[in-house]
Image (cartoon, rainbow, N blue to C red; front, side):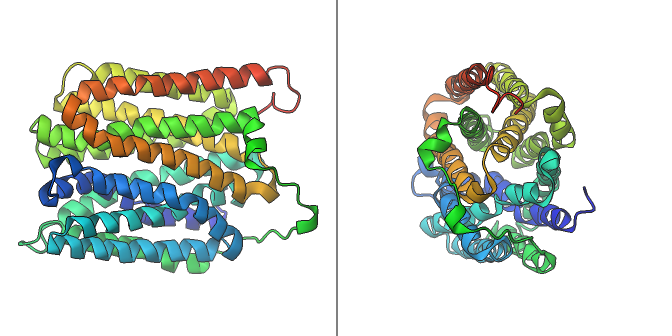
Length: 396
């Protein structure tokens, strides 16, 4: 499967394109705290990056359906590159609002690159979709190490304007996929529009497995985003932990998010989608229980690793579950609808993280995640009950 040229290109592009999210996570709240007129707005740049992703996901799928994946991915990389340059300029000016705009635009570019996972699934046979998505997500571990390290290494290029160099370096990394996609040759699927049988959004949600996939993906991502967004601010400003240790925690969190992809696809095939989502949910609850009591470097480190693993299980599994339950002709509609809900819920969680961490503390933030995990468990139990005796869904 790794001999598939398109899949290999997507994996390489994933490495460079997805350096943007970990850099945003690593630096945006710290930069925000430095240049923001109001301390409670420190996490706004990161939140707006997620809002940019959420608000553009629907249009990303529409664009793909009109101009194709190749052009869509190239334009997205160019947008992220130019937005990173704008971020560097805004830090140079110490203009908080311009920095917020640049983060929003970076998020918009990331919205299109989130379609990599669907392109990877389409590049292989239906029996290999879980493995293809896992291989693609595994590349994120390199992004998670590469992005923050280069950002940290280049932050003092301009001594009087710390972090300008970080975003200049990011602009270079996110431009590389433009070159790589020159060699990408997607197979265009031609369909007779008169014979298309595309369900509307309510009909899609009536499929219990699609509903299960969307809700699990959305609330699993919300738990991850809520805690991940709050972590740098909690460590740096509430626990007085230095930037070097914050970098270590965030990098190990990224490793936790992507390293399990080595075996996640195989586990999905062996145990099924629901069991994997249950497992991810239990890991979420373990993370919450572990990080509730004490705020020190080791506790942050272990809880953020567990948070990443739980997200990996839930997100990859829900993506594969979605892919297996829509028809070819409705793929862009289902993908766009899924990502709109997933990243809108994620954006809401991220936007509220700054307020809750500064006003109520780390322990309270963790407790708020418990109802989200319970929702995931209830939806999965209900889907399993509805599909138990269904010939149409029982093998999914």
